[in-house]
Every structure is written in structure tokens, then in C-alpha cells.
Image 1: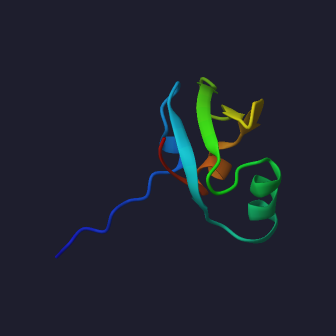
Image 2: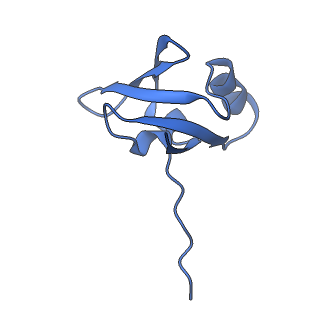
Length: 81
């Protein structure tokens, strides 16, 4: 039986690493909010900092700094840049 590959999400990316947004999961207002912050398919994202308790995560997206919660980051599937 073949294993189902686990998709990598933005919350799994280590500090200092970059990735590219592959897909947004979730629906409705949450997905719209993530898109409004600039996290859309094909966007390059760099993880700058993670707060001591892991929430929020500070990112560089489209030339600006953005902080998002861990549950929002878990809805953003990424691939290595």
C-alpha cells in the first residue's frame, strides 16, 4: 500500500528559508483574508521569525513584512523555492 504524501505547509518552513505558495486550503472568509494579505499561488515567501511560543510567524511577502497566526499558516501549502 502506497503512502499518501503529506503536503508541506507554511507553518512547517524553518526560519530563514524561502518557499513558494502552491495552494490555499480552507474556505470562505479565512481563505479570502489569506489572499488579501498577498499569499496567493506562485508568491515567494521567506520566514523571518517565529515567536517563542510559535505564534505568530513573521514573513516577508512581496517586499513587506507580514505576521500571521499558526492556524492561518497551516492553510497555505508550499513547495521549496
